[in-house]
Amino acid sequence: MADVAVTPTALAINVASADILDADGTAIADTADTFSITAGGQAGQHLLLKFFDDGTGCDVVIKAGDRPPSQRAGLGDLTITMAASDCKYIVIETGRFLQNDGTIRVTATDAGLECKAFTLPDQ
Image 1 (cartoon, rainbow, N blue to C red):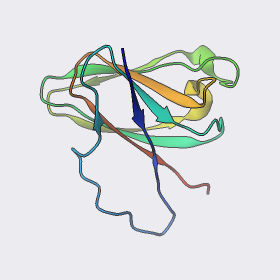
Image 2: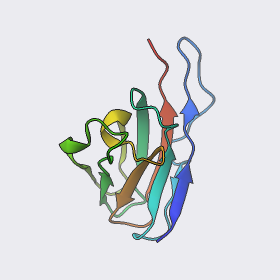
Image 3: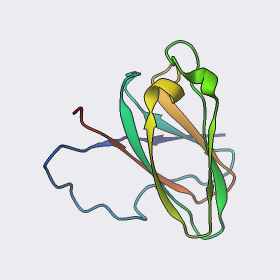
């Protein structure tokens, strides 16, 4: 089992991002791998996650956080079902999924899934 690091791209209000392709995320090579998304240890932040499936479909599991620092870990894991060649975006609250090492952990039932993360600006 290997950790696959994903560093979020910061988005800004009223500023266009660089070109972002659906299929340019970081991929896992094995179903035993885990995405480790840097969240900076901030429980009040929101992240936009993008998942792109390689053509076979799978379940993506965003793992519940641990206490501390995750105040909403009791809500449990979040599972997203991906169809073949699917691309899905989801905004998550770090307060539910933050691990004590400052990361968000994501697993998948299929190798080849890609993940990209974005930090959302405060309003």
